[in-house]
Length: 254
Image (cartoon, rainbow, N blue to C red; front, top):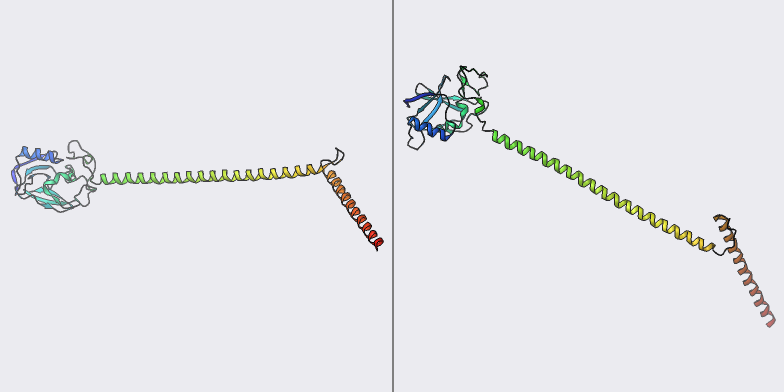
């Protein structure tokens, strides 16, 4: 049973514990044997108004997926599993009704819960709703915000890692290319030095050869070759003459 003496219509139900305690004090409600405040604010079963009252009984637990209503001086339940959001998703304490404002958001013109998908939308100044949907906080909003922030952070991290990887790869290719270019330049310098030494050697070989200054390099090579052949022939003749003299001397001695 509940005290009908303290029952009355109200436009807005308390939205937090502080407002509930203030309303309870004004209405003169007490607490049950477990210390739970007996103040309640619920819509009637017809969804034509909100009522506040002091419940004269034990403030027990209620099933998940149900809202509380008042009808004929008794508490009744109404399924809210089809609500867009705001329906209790776990067993809840009846004195904590203020935590589920979706259960007090009614459209008194169309006599329905505003978060019920079948309830018409719109606003009538003369027969408007008691609680606007904008005033109801989706309990999952915080979860959605956290998940959204984590996704954004993860995407940002992935993009940064890909950019850093590309940058490192480019730097490595640049350093490797510069190293290869340095090696090639060094090899070219060594080759040029060797060719210069080789040319210098040939030029030294041609020094002292009496040739016409207008001769080409090939002509100088031919002259040098002939000179060498003449020298080798003279040496062979000298050796042959010495050999003949030795043979003649040996014959006379005999």
